[in-house]
Image 1 (cartoon, one colour):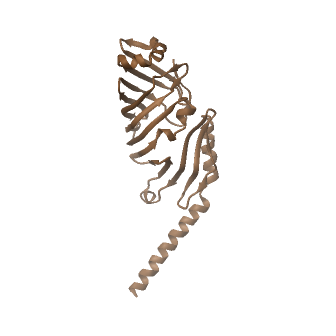
Image 2 (tube, rainbow, N blue to C red):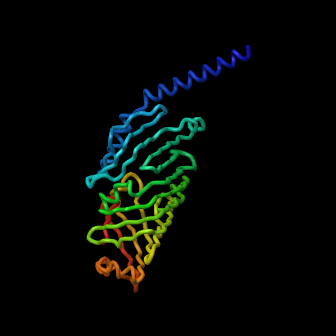
Length: 279
């Protein structure tokens, strides 16, 4: 009797779960969410293709997703998905989980709409060569592998926390910001930190060190729904050794107006994420 009762309870629970997932799948507002997302991207001159489709668990997914602007392709993902996590709902928390496969690397994000713990981010194995942004926006060739990890907490005055950044074996060539080029570099050791304090985002320091050159990028970063069109306020310090400067003396001649002390160039980067410029 007890065994039969247990079997019936398990069968009832399984049936309830299946029906719940079925109703979530059938009534999940895919069209409405896609429309809102398309409008938000459109305000920044962005598009996301192809059309979205539902996932079995409540959520959305894109196969071979492509984020583009009028300049061309910015980001391509073999797989991109956003879904609602069911278990946190039982405790009154609304948590979204997002994931993307970029080349052979991955990006995973958990974002809670309420509660103290707001964001967990982890990225690893993402090759810069698989990100078309560098070619379409900067006109550059880039290589290296991106790693990032961090958490954000929610407080009375907004989000706060840190995101660590690292690019292994960074190399780039052909970078041009407006009318000014940057010196080509390879085999750079990098590390950086993005700090979020009361909702404001700042690249506290991103250092790039290689044979004959040291650079440090810092400043305020745009965030929120209009990040792509919000003005940049970044500063890039470039400190080349004499032999490095000699190899790329034409580039440093063009940057001469930004020399702040012997051997130190402080370059202001303005514009926007989609149109960065040295002014």
